[in-house]
Length: 185
Image (cartoon, rainbow, N blue to C red):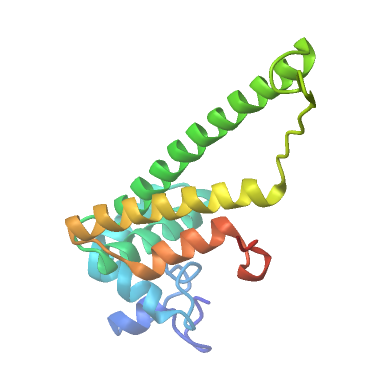
């Protein structure tokens, strides 16, 4: 949208300058998204962004602007940690889920080995004993793990002064699914 006859890009409009056809901002900061440029300008500065975009190959610029816009928004929300707090939270969740998966695989392996060997939990002197592993038990365990992780993250973030309830609630609710599908004990 580099033509000045239609509408200047969000950057040129904010900077109160004429939007020229070769405007480096026009393809990435459309006039209908002014806040995107305002955030990037507040955090990085227009001249720094111009230099950065001019140094990049044109096919890399869109990804760079997307990254700058995200980083700027997160820096404005959390001036101390910025997007690092979200990255740290996601890395922690990934490590926790990997440990949970490893434990579940180990437990499954135990049950498979008991079934193959024919002793232990499958048969007893009084007759066969059933092993019931229902989906409800699994989801209840999973929910307990999510609550534990949520409590740990809440304590960690509130201690650091970086508590963002909406972000944390979004991560927790996205990982346990819709509320109407949660089994109740």
